[in-house]
Length: 201
Figure 1 (spheres, rainbow, N blue to C red):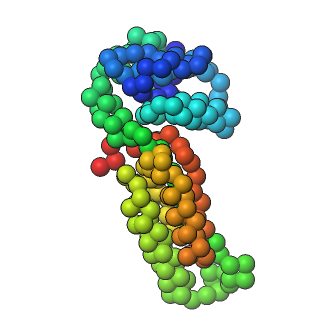
Figure 2 (figure 1 turned 30 degrees about the horizontal axis):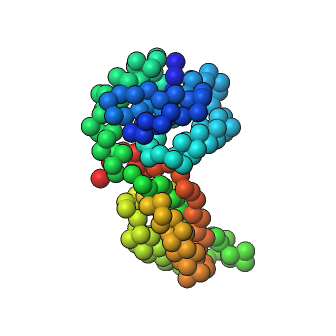
Figure 3 (figure 1 turned 180 degrees about the vertical axis):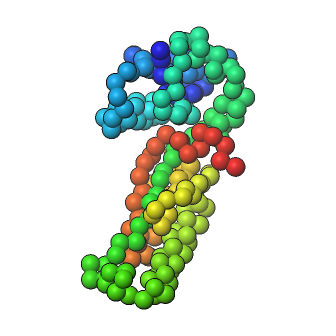
């Protein structure tokens, strides 16, 4: 068994033990399948492999745990979705994913919710939610594409950013943090374009 890590159209072979299985003009980047239990360490090792691969090639990450019997099966899997995968690579070419999470920390001296009126609590929550939504618009304007995810935070979003635009994007996040001191903005990445491997439209 082998695990599929990513799809690329770059023919450069990866470092062993990874292999590139060619199919048409595409390659499935594969690793030996591990039988060990899924742990945080396992996930971080996979993430490190993908980040190293994306340093010098465009790629579409494959869903974690996708396994096939052998290299011939990997080649067939790529061939069956060739048109879709080629379109996906064009969608993310030259770009990476940056993620943003926006929290509204409660002040240390804030009364517990039961000690304040329900309407005041709901109004404060709505105000913070609207502020978080206003953060998304200027950042989405800097991105090739963006996705907002349902989440317990006020905002959880992913942005597909040109590689050369990473620093301007991060600088804009810092500006927004200064403009909205009541909110906590956490920007992470660059990541492989997980949120854009499938067409988000």
